[in-house]
Image (tube, rainbow, N blue to C red; front, side, top):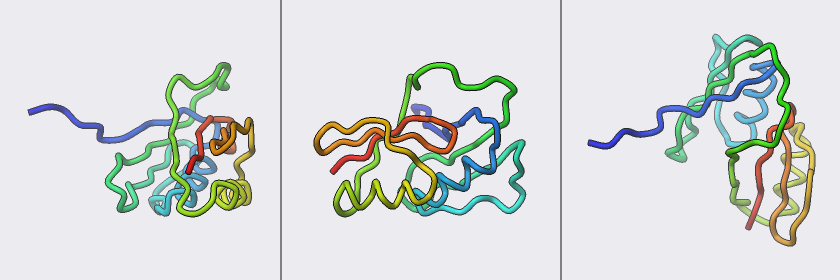
Amino acid sequence: MPTYVKSVTFDCRDALVVAEFWAAALGGEVDEESTPEKAFVEAPGWGGPNLWFQRVPEPRTAKNRMHFDLRAPGTVEDEVARLAALGATVAERHGELTVMQDPEGNEFCVEA
């Protein structure tokens, strides 16, 4: 039997801030025992892995080697605006694909 991805873990300065962003972005909920040191978001019905967030002392210093590609449920511009209202920023635009960053600068893409 092959293995499976149980969770995706983010290293961050404030686990709770990043967890709250991703919970809101993906429609999940932050576990009630989450703190700025460690936080957990259960996969919100889309069948993906759970998301873990852990405080680390060092800042992110380079481009992500892995990132999420999010499919916009409507237009890309509407989804970009929604995610920006949650705390993300636009890094680059490439036609129907927008590269964004979460509140701690982790890149992800939004596409049609």
